Amino acid sequence: MNDPILQPDGPGSLPDRIYTRIVEAILRGDFTATGKLPTEDVLASRFNVSRPTVREALARLRSDGVIESRRGSGSHVVRRPGSATATATPIRNLADIERYYVFRCCVEGGAAAAAAEFHDREDLATMRAEFDALGQAMEGGHSGIEEDVRLHLAIARASHNPFFVNTVETSVAPIRQFMELARSVSDKKSMERVRTVQAEHQAIVDAIARRSPAEAAEATRLHVVNAKRRIFEGTALP
Image (cartoon, rainbow, N blue to C red):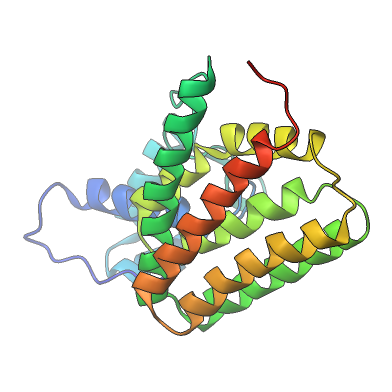
């Protein structure tokens, strides 16, 4: 988490602004769902403020149910900000499925383009590790749903844009829903299918690595369109 030093004349009180910075870090994926926050001393040094100011911001995070303090273990993230009120829009018919995939193209394509522009070395290493994990899972005959979700989240987090991160993370449920549907109507153990899906993912990761936003967005669009096509192949939906 490389946050700039807060200036004393910025908008809002210092505790409010530190609260915002920590929320942004959580949404970027700097901390896992049960991850430990830095100590008050580290946060105070990072933001160039006093420990009481940091303590006030952390108290608000605890009050909001975002973190909890554990004796002898510090503060841990227990809920993503906003997750209590975020709900997935229901998918009711085929038209909603079409709308959902248009939404995915826009959001994930934008996230991939931003990742191509703003990713760092650690982001790229994480994406490649998740890509490898997904390939191993599918080659082993597993659905790879968890690994696929983690790869898409890694791409969003590499954008370093909390709005992309939050939108993709709150879309995990419907993404999983349709991944499961896609695997239920196709041969999930088909090596041809594994190679096709991984080639699509490889194109996204490679474009991000080349720092080519346009290519990353287009590779993502093609992957999402193909994912939709794979859902309908072999189905008898009216």
